[in-house]
Length: 421
Image (cartoon, rainbow, N blue to C red; front, side, top):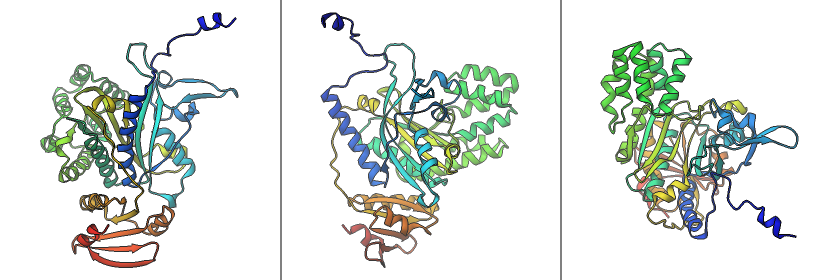
């Protein structure tokens, strides 16, 4: 009776999915713990969102041809629903619906599977095991520097050999399209062909418009390791959007260089993602052993507004499956519960702030950075169970320490602050 039923079973998985056995699962867990420890030490808290969302919401920011990217079906009530294609849009939805202004900035991290439609070619996957973070409510340069610093620190701690992080800026491309006097169709042509890396089609297209400008554009699309190489070229393009976005990128690069990260950086203005919610700085992480991106991210200031609260945001996602392939041998880093502290200062002092934060974290502290406005800081500290607020004065080499529990304040030398356990 049951024999016939067994014979009718489909003894394979749907294409794009696979099983994971104990050894690989254990190694992945080690990778996740290293990533989680870094997230936690920067003050990020874990969030979880449903794997299923209304397609109308989840398609926001996915870009054109979204039907080809989402795995969708009709729910019992007749509504079209989709499996999440990434975590940025669900967290944007969560933030827009649930957060209030006095809860900002908010730092979230996640470990989750995302699902994307793909072709039938062997090896193409439809499930992505992702680890990432979102920094909600901070529009200054310091937030982008923090996010990039965390990404690089994680890849360092995972001992990913030869990794590079390419950084670009969406608005620089928009400025170049304005320079060529393109309409929206022209901009879309550039975007689509940069995504597919079809520089031949771009060259033909631009040369028909202006051969000299086409040469400048293609020169800017060449990845370089030193952003100063582009100084002269940018100065000759009299478009404010190009100039401003380039200077923004130079500021980010300068601080990361001071932090000792320049060896990992590539300036690449050709970076373009299929998700169209990015609004500013954009970046990708590469590894010589892997042909695909091991991570990507950027700024998406207009996305959360679609769900309610109008706040800026930035973040990134790492592909745990690809990180596992890039590693020779995963290692475990033990992390115990630690005290949380807030570190407050000017966003213009982001370099000194990160350096001080790293020294504090070496003592096992969880350190969350805040900039420019401390009017709501003590209530935020109490709500998040932070025990102290540090307000450093780097000119005097002192730091004011506010004890949230004892409700006291004192000023000590920065070196004394660092040495305290």
